[in-house]
Amino acid sequence: MDKPGSVFCVEGQWGDDLAERGSVLPTLELLERLRRIRFIHRDVATPGELRFYLDQWLSRKCTAYNVGIFAMDGGPGRLCLSGQHELDLAEIVSWLRGRCEGKRLYFDCGAILRLSETALVEILEETGASMVCGFTRTIDWVGSSAFDTVLVDRLANGRRANSVEQLVRTARWAPLAQHLGFRMIYQHSQGPRIPAMRRPEPVVPV
Image (cartoon, rainbow, N blue to C red; front, top):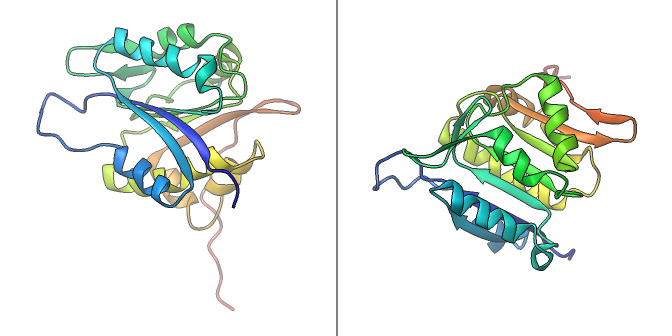
């Protein structure tokens, strides 16, 4: 069996309700039990906490953790860490500038990637990441959890740069990717590639 991929996840506080139990953690635990990933998960509620854990992730001791997940509420170009703290995506990018070589960044944050193609290219090039992906719509928790399971597995274990694109173009997952407004950009031999997420042609029975 191949060595499982490694994931580093920072998760914000979902709203002001302290009884809220939504979390990406069960998805990570499931994949770990299936021996698909190993992971580090940290809760963050303030910019200081987020920056501290990102510095830990990008330190030498966490080199193997090549997938970074930002699991929190958000909007176009904006992350909500808690009811009291928001951050512009541009500020996060400034913290990551030139430090993410070979990393895959997954912004599991509402409509955060409802941005221009120019902005997406800038994020990829400024961070040095090999891939950036996320959503352009506010996402449904149940549907996104199902999508998270296969997406995180592919992010952590897909060896080729276009492996995620291949996943979200399959007949099974393309409709859900489109419904969630999934978007991605990755480093390609000919430069940054932003694939269009199209619904696949229906299968005609024979």
